[in-house]
Amino acid sequence: MIDLALLFFYYFNMKERGLKFLIVLFLLLFFLPGCLEQQAEKKEKAPLKSRFSETKESSSRTSEVKKTKVVLYFPDKEAQFLKKEEVEITSTPSILKATLERLLEGPISSDLTNPFPDGVKILGLNLKNNLLEINFDQNIKKLYPRGSTAENMFIYSIVNTATEFPEVKKVKFLINGQPEEIVGSNYDFRAQEFTRDETLIAK
Image 1 (cartoon, rainbow, N blue to C red):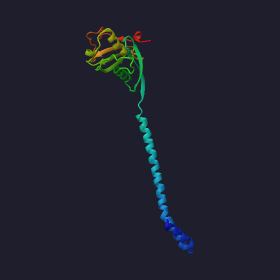
Image 2: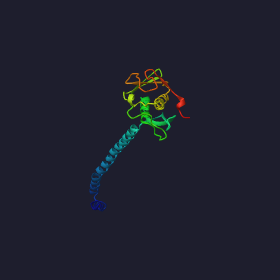
Image 3: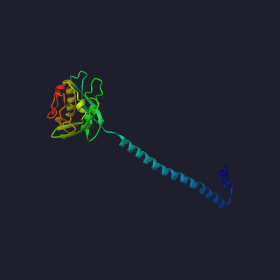
Image 4: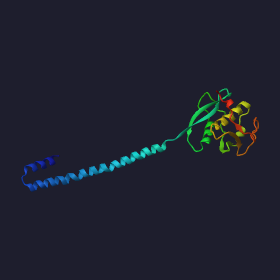
């Protein structure tokens, strides 16, 4: 700053135009490049910031998970009726399978009970002509509840949940891809096709 002040002092006190011109030229050559570099840096940083913001917004949109609301049916505490419970699950092309798998996890409400023992597993589904075949693994034979009340809650929690989808009118249970008998059941799973039972749903 002192050097700069001295230069201006000499400039205004010198009468020789040639010397004044040299001093002005020196000042321009000394300070102008620095100003130009600062402006260039600002221009370079601005697009980077803009691109970073766009990338951040794009990644946040991608991370958003779509949800679908579905209806499940669970027994009440007395196991006399089924009650509806609406839950949200992650949207997927296999929404029917995802719904039934969520059903097996049990209810959210403490006023409802879970009729499915741990270990019940759905291997796959097959829907044709409004008939839904649900393929369970071999464990269902030993995990299947005995007694008419318990098995009705087990069966119709599944059937009434599945028939919430308009394309499903009937449900058939398979074990490892085959219609098999379950010892102790009141139903013949080799031939039985179950339809929705509205009388079991609490009003």
